[in-house]
Length: 367
Image (cartoon, rainbow, N blue to C red; front, side, top):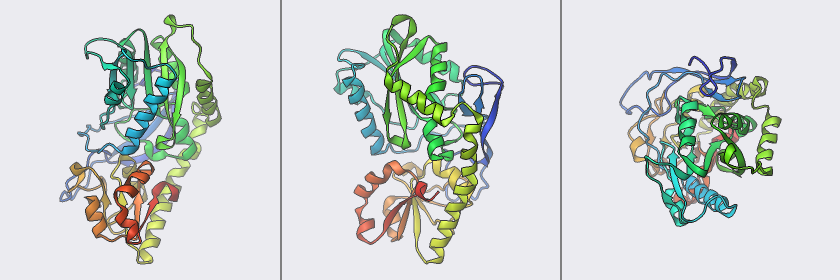
């Protein structure tokens, strides 16, 4: 990277360094002995525009293997209902969606509200980006493209995992190859201004510990000012010092502490003779397991709902990825859940675990 992915500025600092890590979306076949290729994994904060971003990424993206969690579907339906209730979505409007490559779409639910999909080669009344922008190395170009597709008088909607949340909860393992932008409302305000847009309203959701959805319109087309919901997010940004490198010091400190805590906890369970398996072969689990030095001896398997991940292993480890049924065959006393948003879903789908006396433990609660 030769400058900021958004403003092209060259002043900034590395604010989070996870060392060399395997690509989080590359799941080798279980029979592949490795070693897996590793690459530097660092977050750089631009001190000109405030965008936190992936410093370099020499990896090659793999095809998505994930299965969309129920929590994401429920959040999409909730978001659409709230945005529509506030007057931003109306029957008859056209919509163009930039979605996450990991899957999931809002279009069916938007159709239930009377909106229709716009043509791919045309503009639309509503342009929606749901966790898509972060996957683009050229942040400036990707945002400009989305803005250019908004029809006259239209709205740009952007959903993102809040950087303030990452700092507040110490979610250092949100950093991964292939995710180029980590957004604060403050940084997005500056980014949107460069393409002639301003944020008018915002909505907060509990997904991932704190997710925001922004509505922005062209500055030249509207005299509408930002409402209190936007000011609340900006106030939270100031509180968390999201544009100040000093605000990230605690996040970097959590890396060693939480990795050691996980390894210690797993070691204690083994000494007590308890069987612990994991659930959720997600990107966030990759860096955590690698930094903690966890291998099959401490965690014999990680289960996942995605059939495409089975018969493979967690990157950088010898831990196999198995099916939920295979997980139950272990008769584990504890299942370590790497994705907190899945808790209600997996408890409902796999009641056998608790019936047999097992329990779910959320990894984030340990670290």
